[in-house]
Length: 363
Image (cartoon, rainbow, N blue to C red; front, side, top):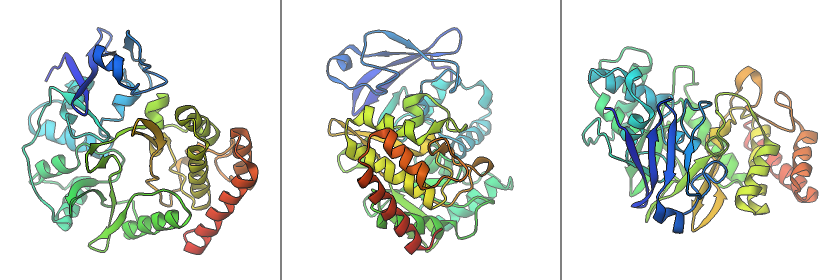
């Protein structure tokens, strides 16, 4: 695999093309037709302009944030690298363009990449207990590789650290998670409880379900009946790594308003912040906030990855008015004030969320 040029598509329309510079940086150019009738796939970094954009070296090793969102993270990358090794290919020799070709049409969101590089053939396995055992063996380095093709096909495009698979069940596309060795044994039930509490707190959340009474599943909001939905994370929009605590919720509120031009969407972000504070979800990094471009407008995605987490060094990955360790009401309301929210309405949202979390018993 030595791809020199990758074409980017959205709903069958060519968005543009990607190439690699001699310095191993990605270069992107919009297609002429897309410039006339498309939308900016990364409004702040890739505006609709007739020019060649060159990515920076950091933080994505020469990639653009929006395309970095398409690449698998942690678990998915582990699967892909294991599959490459099985095919006697050194993962270190694979370029970003090659990895986007491997993603092909299977990535999160709506962007697709051609030419596509198929690492495995179509497979079908829907026994969740078998999949859970296989993921556990792989994480414990006791894996014999017998089901690697199935794991790659069902989870090789996934982000995040927890093992997961994508399955279509009863006509719906589901993302189903398994535990890692460091997770509590009831992590599935715990995440289900948090998402239920979030719904009670009036957050917009996808449909959730406990499969086999223990595996947490959530419907994919980047998929709907008539196709894929364009999605980009805060990390992708701002070209900031989710591995380092570089954001504050004030910045996320500003981002939401600049992108959506809608205070109702900003209020959703504020409500999500309140939930993360009161429910002690400190894994609130820049890839855990996403935006959708659907029906020709930008909006905040449904909330996801909501569960108890201590965070790096015991602090929120995204600070609340500069406070990461012990944020409280004064920090929350400071974010509201700096963001231009109606303070009376903001306080009402805060109290609603605090009450819902308390009633749910997930503090």
